[in-house]
Amino acid sequence: MDTNDNNDDACGCGGGSRSSSSSSRLKYLIIRPEKGGIGDLYRYLVWADLASGLRFLEGSDQELVERVAADHRWVILVSLILRKFIAFFAKPMEWTGYAFDFFLNLLSLNHNLFGLLSNLLQGKVVVPERDTETFISLIGHLDGRIDLYKTQSLLLLQDTDNNSESSVLGERSIRIEMGNQALMDLCIMASKLAYENSKVIKNVVLHHWKMHFVEFYSCWNDFQRERSTQVFILCDKDKDANLILISFRGTEPFNANDWSTDFDYSWYEIPKLGKVHVGFLEALGLGNRADVVTFQNHLKKWTNSCGVHVSKSPSQGRESVSSNIDSGQEQGQGIKKIPPEMVEMTAYYAVKSKLKSLFKEHKNAKFVVTGHSLGGALAILFPVVLVVQEEMEIIRRLLGVYTFGQPRVGNKELGRFMEAHLNHPVPKYFRMVYCNDLVPRLPYDDKTFFYKHFGVCLYYDSLYIEKHMDEEPNRNYFGMRYLIPEYLNAVWELIRGLIMGYTHGPEYKEGWFCVLLRVIGLALPGISAHCPTNYVNSVRLGKERIIQLSSF
Image (tube, rainbow, N blue to C red):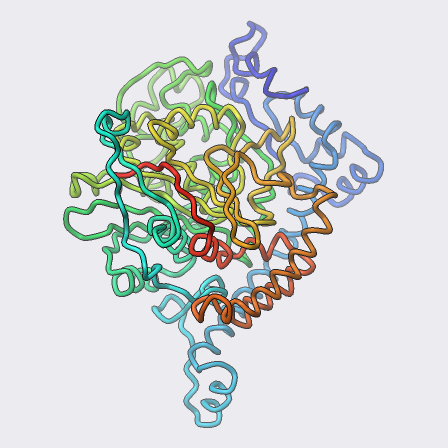
C-alpha cells in the first residue's frame, strides 16, 4: 500500500481521538542509525526481528513505522548499514581527505613530483596553506578548468511573439544548443567552484569570469552541530546587474556527513504540499530531527496543523521565522520562537536576506540557483521554501534552477505543487543527469520511500548525447539488467578519459587524479560517474537541443 494514501488523519484532521499536541499533528519518518547497536542490526538482518528494526525508526504514526520495518526491511537495512559504515569511518575519512588535500596541493604548488623533489633538494619547497587563493579542493584537482566556455556570450535572448503568453508576462526564450549554452555552462562551473574556499571563489569570479563577487557563506546545520553548508552569490556586474547567481556546495568526497545525508531516507511532510527529505532541510537550516517540531516552526508558518491558511503577513529576512510565530495559538501548538542569532547563521535565511537586499540594488535583476550533488538538492529546495513562506515577490524574479547530479528531495505531491510555480509560462527547473551517476538515483524510489524527481531531466549518456525525459534510466540504480552495462561503460569511460585530450582538445585532457577516479569506477561505476568533470563535458559537448527556458 502506498503510504501517501493514508495521511489525512495523521495530520490531525481525521478524528477526535488524536491528541491536540503539536507532535501528534506532524507527519514524519526518521531513520536513526545511532539509536540501535550492531546486535540490533544483526538480528534485524538475519532473523528479521522487527523489534530490533524498530529501534532505528521514529515516526508520527506507529502503524506506519511498523509497516515500513516489516515490508521494506532490505531498503532500511541498506540505509542503516551504509550510514553506520560511513559513521564508523567518519574520522578516518576526514583525516584521509585532509592528507589528500594537502598532498595534491603540495604537488601542484611545486610543479608535480619531479618539481617537488627538485625543490626539496634546493630547500625551496612551497608549503600549501589552507584557506588561501592557491589552496584548491579535491574537486578542483579532479577538474582544473576554471574559465567559462570561451565561445559563448552569457545569454542569447530571442524575443518571443508579441502575442504569446510568455511575451505578455515579460518572458523570453534562451536557445540551448551547441556553442550557445552559456547559462548552463556558468551554472556547472559555479557549482564546481562552490567546493572551493572563499578566497579561491572570489579570485575566480573577479579575475577569470570578470563578474561581481557578492558573498560567501559557511552556514550552520543544527543537527550536525557545525557550519557544514557552503554557498556563494555573484552578480554579472556590480551596477545594474541583470543576473544574480546562487551556488550551493555539493557532497565533498571525504565528508562523512554529506554522504550519510545522501543515503538517508528520512522525510517530513509539509501539510497539503508534500514530503521533503529531512537531511536536506537540516542543511538549509530549517530544522533538526532531534526536535521534529523545529521543522514546523519554519515550514508551517502560514498554515495550521491541517494545512488551512491562517495568515498573509509577509516574512522579512531573518525575522521571517521569529515574527508572528510565538502567538498564543501557536504556542499552544508547541511552536517555539527561534532566536534571531540562530536564524542568521543558516543558509536559507542568510541567502534570502541577501537576495532581498540585492533586488533593491539591482532593480531589473533575476536570479538563478544551482548546485552539484547535495548542492543541487539545496538549490531546488530553496525556491520550494520560498513558495511555502509565500515569498512570491522573490519567486517572480526566479530565472531558473539548474542542478547537476542532484539526489531526490521529495515526493510526487511536492513535485506537482512546485511545477505549478516552475513550469509556467515556460520551464524553469532543469535537472542534468550524467549516465550511471549513482546520486540522482538516491534516495530510494518506491511506495514507502516515495522519493520522486520532478522538473525537466536532461540525461546525457557516456557519448554526451542528450535525451530529454521525465526520469533517468535505472531509476534506483540497482536494477540487475543494468549491472553488466554499467561495468562495461566504466571501462569505456576510462579509455575515453585517456584519449579526450587528443580527440577534443587540450582543455578536455584528464589528469592523473581524474584517471585514478576512472580506475576506481571500474569497481564503483556510480561513484566515478558523479564527478563534475562529466557534467562540464556534457554541457559543453552535449548534442544540440533547443529548449524553451525562462529568461529576463
